[in-house]
Each structure stands twice: as C-alpha cells, then as structure tokens.
Length: 601
Ligand SMILES: *[C@@H]1O[C@H](CO)[C@@H](O)[C@H](O)[C@H]1NC(C)=O
Ligand SMILES: *[C@@H]1O[C@H](CO)[C@@H](O)[C@H](O)[C@H]1NC(C)=O
Ligand SMILES: *[C@@H]1O[C@H](CO)[C@@H](O)[C@H](O)[C@H]1NC(C)=O
Ligand SMILES: *[C@@H]1O[C@H](CO)[C@@H](O)[C@H](O)[C@H]1NC(C)=O
Ligand SMILES: *[C@@H]1O[C@H](CO)[C@@H](O)[C@H](O)[C@H]1NC(C)=O
Ligand SMILES: *[C@@H]1O[C@H](CO)[C@@H](O)[C@H](O)[C@H]1NC(C)=O
Ligand SMILES: *[C@@H]1O[C@H](CO)[C@@H](O)[C@H](O)[C@H]1NC(C)=O
Ligand SMILES: *[C@@H]1O[C@H](CO)[C@@H](O)[C@H](O)[C@H]1NC(C)=O
Image (cartoon, rainbow, N blue to C red; front, side, top):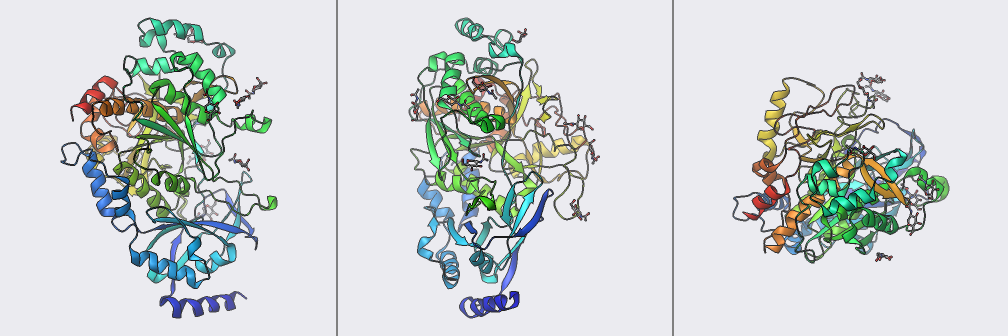
C-alpha cells in the first residue's frame, strides 16, 4: 500500500515537475509530546504557505535605513504599496508553486492569498497534504492532554525548495502563551483606594505618594516614567493596538470599571476591535471554567494599562483565533495554531491610514518549539511592519532563562541549555522585560507564582549589527558565567524594560493584581505612543522600528536597572548590570528626555 502510493507520487512528480522530492525540514518533536495514532482519514488541514519574498534583502536594508538616526532616509517609512513590491514573490515562484499544486488536483483559484501574495492558505484533506509533502501526519498528545496533528518531517520537489520558505502546520508544536500571572491578593487590595487615587490626581503626584508596590496603577506609571503632565495632541492620527490570542478579549464592562476607578477623565472612552479569522469577542459573563482559566485577564490587563497611559489615543484590539486544543473526538476538522500567520495576513492588508503606529503583544513561546523556517518567515513579516513605521513590541517572557527542570535542548541531544523565547528572539521586534519596586527599580520576580522576568539569546537568529557593541560588552563582562548554556552569537533580548509586577487590573468586576512582562509590554507601548503623539503633532514621522535608534543613542535617556537577575534553569540566570543587560535591556523610560531626543531628529 505504502509502496504503491510512493510509486504513484513519483509517476506524478517526475514527468510533471521535473524534480524529485527532497526533505525540506525536520524538527524534533518537543518533550512532552507523544505520537498516539495516525491522523484520522477525514481530517482536513488548513495549510499556511510562506513563499520566498522576491526582494527581502532590500526590505531589510530599507528597514535599517529608515530606522537609523543619521541616515538620509531616517523615518522615511515605506508605504504599504512599496513594502508589497519588495515582499511579493516573483512570477516564477508563483507559477512553479501553482503548477505543482495544480498537478496534485488542488484548485489554485481557491488559494487565499495576502495582497502581496507572499502568504497563502488552503484547506486540504490530510491524504492530499501527505502526498504533496511526501510525509505522514500523526496525532500527537501532550502530557497535559492537548492533541495536535503534526509531522516531524516533510519534503518538497527539489525545484521548489528555494521558492517556499515554510509550510505549517507541519512541524510546529508551538503554543503561544500569555505572559501574565495573576496571583491571589489580599482583600484590602480590592478596595485599594479609588479615593486615594482620585485625591492624588488633583495634587502634585510624586512616586512616593502615588506608587505602592502592592498595586501598580496608571497614575503610578505615568508619574514614574514622567508622562503625567503630557497633553495628548494627535489622538486622531496616532493609534496603538494590542494583540489578543487564545480567545482573550478585553471586556468592555471591566475596562469601564477600570477607567472610572483609575483614569476617571477617560470616562466613556472606547476601543475598537478587529475580529481576525472569527476571533473571540465574548462580552457575556465567563462560565465557571473560563473563570477558572482566568479568561480575559490578559486582554483586560493590556487594554487597561494602555488606556491608563495613552488615553485618549485611539486603541485597537486584534482578536485573532487559531488555537489548540484540537479534539479528534469532537469532530473538529481543522486544528490551526497559526495565530501569527493569520494576524500578519490581516494586519499587512491594512492600509497606511488604518495601520497603528505601535503594537503590543504579550504572548510568546519557547523558541525551540517553533521550527526555524517558520520563525524566520514570521520574523520577516514583522520587519515589513517596521518598514511601514510600526513599533512592534513583544513581552520577553516570565520564566527567567527557563523554568527549572525544563531546560533541555530539542535537538536530539538533550543538552542542558537556557530556553529563549520567540518572537522576542526576532531581531526586528523590540522585546520588553519587567521591573518592580521604584527607588530603585529592580528585576521583577514573584516567588508566589514563579514569575521571573525573561531574557536570553536566540538559537535561531544571529546577533543583529545594531546590538553588536552592547551585547558583546555584556557577554565579555559575564566572564564565562553560564558558558555553554546560551548562544553568545544570538540575537539577545530584551531591549528595554518597564514595570511588570502587581498591576491593578479590573477583571470579573473587581480589582486583581497581575504580574508579568505582559504588564510591562503594554506599559512600554503606552509610553512610546506618547512619544509618537508628540512627533505626529509636530508634523514628523513616528518612531517605527525602535532598536537601531535605541542602541545608537536613545538608550542614554533610559534609567539603567542594575539590580536583580533572570534566574531559572536552576541557575542565577543573567544579572542586571550597568549598561545593557540580558534581563532589563537598557532599562526604563524617562519620557521627557526620550521625547525631546525624538523631536530633535
Ligand atoms: C500599600 O498598599 C497596602 C495595601 O493597601 C497598604 O497596606 C500599605 O500601607 C501601602 N504602602 C505604602 C507605602 O503606602
Ligand atoms: C476558544 O474558544 C473555542 C470556542 O468556544 C473553544 O473551542 C476553544 O477551546 C477555546 N480555546 C482556548 C485556548 O481557550
Ligand atoms: C464600546 O464599543 C462596544 C462595541 O462596539 C459597544 O458594545 C459598547 O457599548 C461600547 N461601550 C461604550 C462605553 O461606549
Ligand atoms: C533542577 O532542579 C529540579 C528541581 O529541584 C530538578 O528536578 C532538576 O533535575 C534540576 N536540573 C538540573 C539541570 O540541575
Ligand atoms: C532525549 O529525551 C527524550 C525524551 O525524554 C528521549 O526519548 C530521548 O531518547 C533522549 N535522547 C537522548 C539522545 O538522550
Ligand atoms: C467572579 O465574580 C462573581 C460575581 O461577583 C463571583 O461570585 C466570583 O467569585 C468571581 N470569580 C472569580 C474567579 O473572581
Ligand atoms: C464581562 O462583561 C459582562 C458585562 O458585559 C460582565 O457581566 C462580566 O462579568 C464580564 N466578564 C468578566 C470575566 O469580567
Ligand atoms: C528554581 O531553582 C532555583 C535554584 O535551584 C531556586 O532558587 C528557585 O526557587 C527555583 N524556582 C522555582 C520556581 O521553583
């Protein structure tokens, strides 16, 4: 049976396409997953193809040109059309891929392309996909009971290898998680004083009077980072967005309670939701199971934090579907867990006047569960957003250098190593670490829920030029500490930090404290949005991709965090130190100085 099928495949492949199948990608099945059977015959797979972008090198050069102060093109961001020209595949790529699919009976008119045609999706029966990719899918089950249909290896006709970057779901076992941890709070916090906050608003707030480490509020963040006296001027033009994955949705009722309590002048403010691929926008009370899961804590945290800082700047939420678990027994016919692909497809289609200038994402996963080709495909699409002038922020993770007992390589060798996170490890995004306390701020952690602000070095991406000097200096300063546990030549993160511990969040009608780089990331996004507001109001272009400017000069305006460490993997992790470090980056914001520097460009 097997034999006759591969004969049939060859009979098709050779004459029609002129080349034989070669393995395109193998990926070790991550620990915790086991094959439990073959894919059901009636299973259908929504396949996402990333095609080779014809002029990515030019796109990357443009990204760096428009993001590097001193370059003649600094902040001359590309239009959507210009970016599409650079990322669209060649006619040859499109022709060969469609010819191959057509020869397998796939209706090429049914391919769902992005406007720039560098991604497309198509839903096919599993046996067709197995023939196309000369592979065999299985049902894999995680120790936690989650099931996925995946394969550790797939192939393509040789002549397509340079035209197709990645195809998923094949080898990808990643499961983005929320970088936030709620912890049970003392009862008094619930009443933590709306009154005190309201009173403090009318006086001259200082960090001493408005910041309390048991409940970090917008007034505290605005006072600490110096935005409290800033008046928004360009909120009609300047926009900010958050990403909601995993069915997270910001609850309007909770957000309103938060606003009335912590930012009363924002009363009546509302945000706009883009539903991507039938994403969730539940506004009815959570079910008992959803309450148990803490559904919407993350989305509420993100929206509330941003409104608290950047009100009345327009806020968008992207609610993108595409999550496991896939339950074969439930008769579900598709298990997509490709939220980035779906979201990138959506956002890259948004026109220049809709696209937000800042996007905050509080999700990530172990880099080693994300196949290299897929990580590169996604990372390149973040570069395209940066080239269009978007600051793309990701949380650096909540497990230090890796959770104790999980620090094993997924390369067949089971080496002990630190566990970097994706997408923070992508060099075209800005990664945000977490701090706590105020005078001084130190690396955030919480023994009660195992939270430690994350940081590290990529195994998928090389160190980009812009951070060469800062990171080299840091690695040399480590003087051999943790040698062999991390890739000294990898893209290092985070790039900067913000408060990330015990944020006051309204959820399920009452105040809760939430920890995480999930809190730090929207806080950082809120401050950056105000810098963009000042730029746009002055008739200038927004910051866009932050890192080249940050590492070249903007870091001088940051408060250096020098105390604490990203412990994990049974080690002390990376220490915070003078200058850049792999746990707080360059540190935290001084808004006035950063804004003035930005305006001087
Ligand atoms: C911080 O808030 C807690 C809880 O309301 C309170 O007990 C404590 O006294 C406050 N600390 C300061 C320094 O105000
Ligand atoms: C998302 O919602 C869908 C539909 O209610 C449900 O089947 C799925 O399990 C949910 N996923 C997560 C991660 O909560
Ligand atoms: C905010 O927008 C949502 C969705 O458009 C709507 O249901 C809700 O009533 C609005 N809330 C306020 C306070 O305007
Ligand atoms: C780390 O500590 C955990 C719990 O104490 C232990 O199970 C594990 O073997 C340790 N791992 C290493 C690499 O030392
Ligand atoms: C690595 O660990 C996995 C799962 O624990 C095990 O199946 C495999 O045999 C190990 N490989 C090596 C080379 O030790
Ligand atoms: C959610 O709110 C309801 C109603 O106030 C309350 O009974 C319940 O205990 C709350 N659940 C959680 C997990 O906070
Ligand atoms: C969401 O909003 C509804 C009212 O629209 C409220 O009854 C419910 O408790 C909220 N859910 C959560 C989880 O906060
Ligand atoms: C991880 O291990 C370190 C050192 O062995 C220990 O100090 C720390 O408490 C552990 N963390 C957790 C969350 O168990």
